[in-house]
Length: 470
Ligand code: ADP
Ligand code: MG
Picture: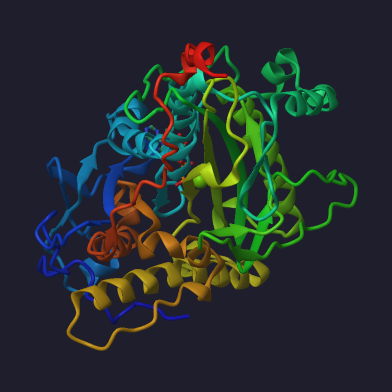
């Protein structure tokens, strides 16, 4: 594994990669990857902070005397520019507004989105993405806003069903009712849910926001979620419906990645669960997290070493001329997705004092992040031009392979870089800054709306037209 120790100047004379101001290199229909920086509050036991926010988009970091950088003579503070820097007192709701809401809005308008949380272990990635019962993060808020927005136009359960190749089949409402009847035993009772769920309805304050623009009253919608863990070169389906053997648990089986007919990558044979509310989605998430804990234990590793990918897919189909049911024509489906990725800790192994197995595995796990970094660098270099265009090595890791299409213009990409303000984390934090700076120079094509036009009269949902139709 490449080590940047000694090669790259750490800290130093504020000499760094030139950050292109937002919009400056804007070509038609291309936007830079949006990179936000969230600084978590300093903890009591952590001593001193090494950072200050000098503007709402600029962070200043000072090398502490104890840092490797300081010891090698780099004593000046550095400044780092982002789309926004979010301070430790900003609420989860503010962060959702800034980062999550635009992605939710796009999803409802039929466009894809991808959000990464990047940073060292204990920097606030999971807090930002999932959050805590009394401080829900981006994921539950996205779900709340989606369900608030489609409340009136949600399709009955099982009208849309995954077809096994990343698409959906459409069934009539009577078929759907049969399926609902078949599945009636599988529902978790609200009491069981409240007992099991950390995010039970009693504790959680749902997000009240709603997207109105782009939600089509003449369509019906359904929400599907999937949850995949990427660890080394494996992709595990955390929602797989095979019972976990609690006495002799076996490591989960890895899945392959495939490309569908629309050139979207997906986890082949992965489970997608239709959910009708945020609470249902949380049951699913929790089921996945339980599996994740078992899997990590059987593989003798820690969860901070793997990447978890929670994907929300929104399926919509237009209503027929009478406004009574969706048109059963697959070619009229609009499928959009939002992937929320809680990445593995970005720290290098030298710091975590691993031995034996842990060390070997830690080296591997960083490989996914290394490839992500190389892909970003290659993309940026290719876009800057001047030299020969190099192939972006997406296929070198499961993580980048799964998301390669986003970087080729399939959707909006955003990243939240989570940082700990603690002086003791300085040397790692500087590496994080460097990656962030490369990332925000990468330009991604603006996602196209994929919604199909059916050429039927609007207002069909009211059913008034049925009086006129034969
Ligand atoms: P990571 O997922 O990056 O390892 P976590 O999200 O688990 O880190 O955060 C580490 C700890 O810091 C947790 O105890 C979490 O509650 C706390 N924390 C992180 N970010 C914030 C924040 N913005 N405000 C308050 N507490 C935070
Ligand atoms: Mg975490």
